Image (cartoon, each protein chain N blue to C red):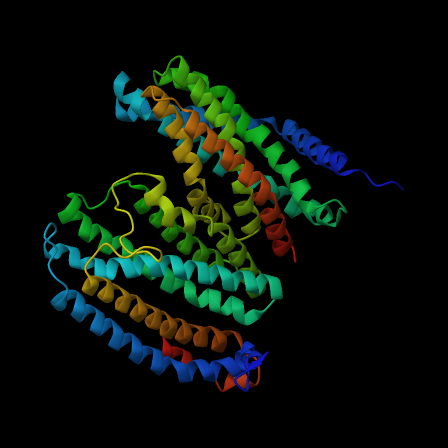
Length: 227
Length: 253
């Protein structure tokens, strides 16, 4: 029997997770609506002043993206853990870290990508325009995969624990801070007209670093959780 | 590994380490008391008054050593955690567990004294400066590690999971250390460094270093006391552990 190659295994994991998500479409829709509702609450609370809204737009939208990622982290491994699929996944001869990359990618497509696609619309709500709108979308496109990557570590560490929802927030939110600072900073600096390249480069660096280390740490954490 | 005629590996067994730790605690406690006493005396009575900040600056004799310790202890905790994961050694995990609360305490102390210094000097209790923010994140990480351990009932998993998280969080330590150089924000750069001569009066440096040594000794004493509790709690089912009785744990607490 020939073994599937690493890229075939990766594709298999992504395909399966996306297929499962498509079968539960309401789950995906929920995270989209969550983002829209939370982002719409701020103008109601802060008041409709255009200048104020434009100033807080990047921070609010980034924090919303953070929360959306955080809330969907429970879906990443829990279902597989409960029905035993995760245990079988650990037995697959391909490196676990590669399979984790597949799962995280699928998670990002389901929870991060909708936020990225929605962000120009939400930005308009907050009075952003032109360049800063593009920078917002680009920063989210670069940043949200990092969030999913770092979140996976927390999700794996807290797998099957009581109160894991709150615990994962406690663990993961501090790790999200650099991404939040650079992401929101990119939009703010583009609004101030000093160019957002530096912040976007740093976001890219965060992404590459997390791509290199996070799947590996997640794999270790999964093995610990299922020992 | 034997050195100076002592088989050091003997002490990697909790059973042998428990009495050794007990013997060391009084020495470290005495050293801590003496050094912190001397350090505070030099800091408050010998060191000259700063011509710009007046006497308010004297809080740095607690602030700077506490901030150093918060980072040192994190790295040491992560190192024990890494050794534990690599060599599968239970006592390393016990050390990591024992260091975490002391590290969190120093981080909190650094933030508290920093804000007490910030109010008269900067005019604000808190500013969102890079170093302050990254130190705050360090506190969150300590809290995360402690609560992750607390919410896992299986000891083996608790040890290993919190070790992984501790290692992931090491990224933050260089960020804190270099934050004043990377981001040019309100918090001043380092006045004391290994490579250049200090930019402050000699007595001030002395006080700061003596305080740091004192905090080290305090950390040793407290960590050892805590690791004794951990050992007594975990090994109570074993025959020798019954001698290290629960009563002793209660006393040590």
